[in-house]
Length: 192
Image (cartoon, rainbow, N blue to C red; front, top):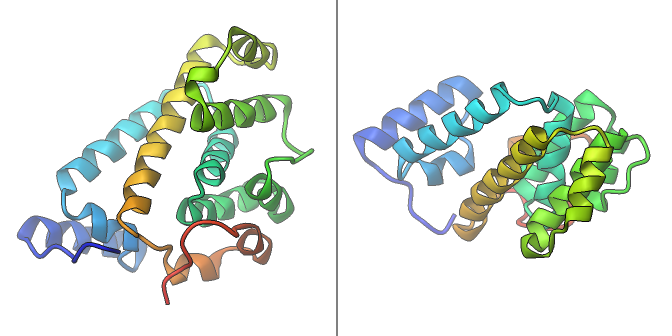
């Protein structure tokens, strides 16, 4: 990353906790260690949104993969593409990460993926017709709101990491299925 690693008692405690949780300190945690309080609040807000959401786990993962691809975030694409591969298949994950054209997605998932693309690429260009399309796919207005907030939170997270030059962890890339690694041709290369 472009910043140095912080060396404060707060950052050291944050990184030690993260290492105990994941087994290693992820590159993105080194950036967020500059403000562990903000990292904690961000994580708690995202958790509160998803814990009480009507969106299913696979739908949330499709939203993250679509958002990560649309913003060109290799880090989140590798992490969440691996999750999608476990929930569905490596082929489906690769298709979502390449161009979003995955026939195996449900009607709701396809509508959510199209919505995530719209939110990322041109939120001011959204239309009533797009909202109606999402409703017709079986999503409630609350779920549409939740999906929109979730996508924008993911965009904020990705933007911080990408702007600060955070590269995907080698461990993360090595753990991703080959199809997922091959699909992620954008963003920063994994660290050595």
